[in-house]
Structure formats: structure tokens, C-alpha cells
Length: 141
Image (cartoon, rainbow, N blue to C red):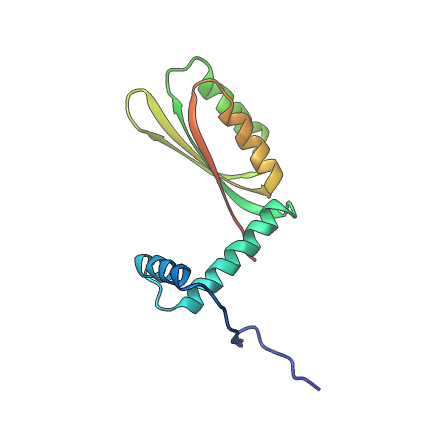
């Protein structure tokens, strides 16, 4: 019978690639400070599995919602605060940064289902005076 494998045991497998693609991959690795292809491939697989967890399974994840908005837009800060109060159970932390006299950066760190975080972010991004926004999801594989 086969013995039970530990989580730390590594498996070797081969990967075939065109020479031009492997050269681009090696350049990518060098720019990012990877010591070898194996670690980079492990990171790519982890990222792929985490994205699947977020996009397909609507799993509970951490989300970073960041957006820049016009500080002087009438009632905008009140609406942003209202969204945050309505969703306080999902919010772990918020940070507010004054970029200049007219613009602010808000960062909201959340933990909830991916679709709920996306829905909250989309509602904020659609507010008049929000100039740009971005969502980033992170999850354990």
C-alpha cells in the first residue's frame, strides 16, 4: 500500500514550452527576483487556485477596495460613510488619505463573500465624484 504523503513533500513533473515563451518567463522571473522556475510555477498555481476560489466559488475572502474621490463633491463623503455603516460586519479596517486639496484616497479592507465585496465596491465606484476604483481579492488556497 502507498504511504500517506506529508504536505511538505515535493513532486517533480516536466513542463514543455516553446523557447520564446521560456525566455520571456525567465526574464519575468529575473525581474521579480525568483531563484528558480519551480517557485514561480508554485506561485502561479497558488494564484490560479485562489482566483478560482474567488471568482467561481464565491468563497469568503479578503478584499481590498481602494478608490480616489473628489473631496468637495456634495454629499459624497456622507454616502461613502453610509455604505460603510450599512456593511460594518464585512469591514475590518478603513484608511483615508488626503492626496491633495481636492482628492482623497480611501482604502477599505473587508472579509466576506467575494460577490458581496464586489457589489459594495461597485456601488461606491458608481457614486458621482468617485474618480477611479479597484478591488483586489486575496484568499488562502
